[in-house]
Length: 84
Image 1 (tube, rainbow, N blue to C red):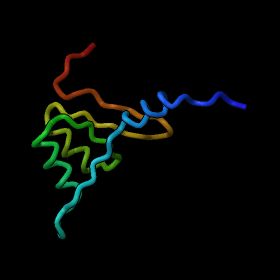
Image 2: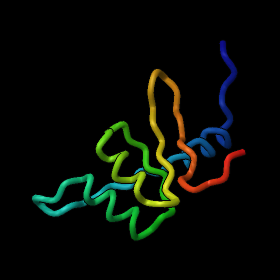
Image 3: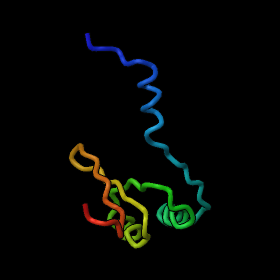
Image 4: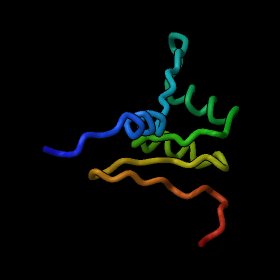
């Protein structure tokens, strides 16, 4: 049998990602709500595969974008960040 995970490890994994539920008004698109929230508070990493939303968020400086493809997660570097 495989090793059991300790409760501390499971608890630590729960805090890696936080999902925010957006309660939008009827007739408001979720993309608009996400962009509005990111414009007000630039502390989020936006995870999306939507190409149009990625284009809109790239225009906002200081907001990283996370993509998931082929079983891998990629976080784009911050716009305006120096090259390593």
